[in-house]
Length: 169
Image 1 (cartoon, one colour):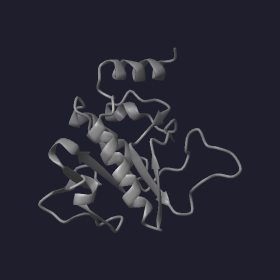
Image 2 (cartoon, rainbow, N blue to C red):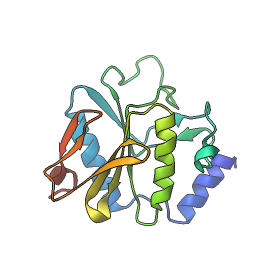
Image 3 (cartoon, helix red, strand yellow):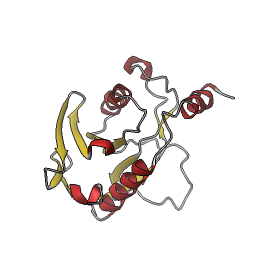
Image 4 (tube, rainbow, N blue to C red):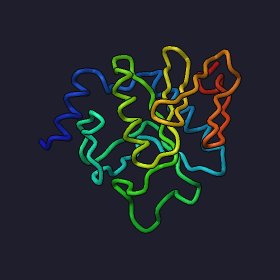
């Protein structure tokens, strides 16, 4: 087994990367809501090629690929009639990570540093257990939204989503 497969399997064995019911629910809702925006194409669990950068500088053990829970590209990127891409070379505009019950916040924040260094414009940290979302415009700059707000607003991407639709209220 290669190193990446071993690391992935170890994480699953530890229960850190096991998607839960709420994780899956929120992931599906976000992709569905973003699908309604004609400017973007959302993707779920898409492999991104990160072999061009050493991610150990962010404390990540990832060498070849990183997989956001949801990411969005411009609407010009969609189904590929020519050939399927196993790993996307082009980075998305936005990456969304949904924290799992046994996952550390620091793990996701390290990924956000990598995402921004790869040229992504925005990152979202979705916390189902708190029914809240932190929208990051930079690695250390975020705005928090919860059910006390009517919308999640990403000023960088000009995205407005009703928060109650994300968490199923």
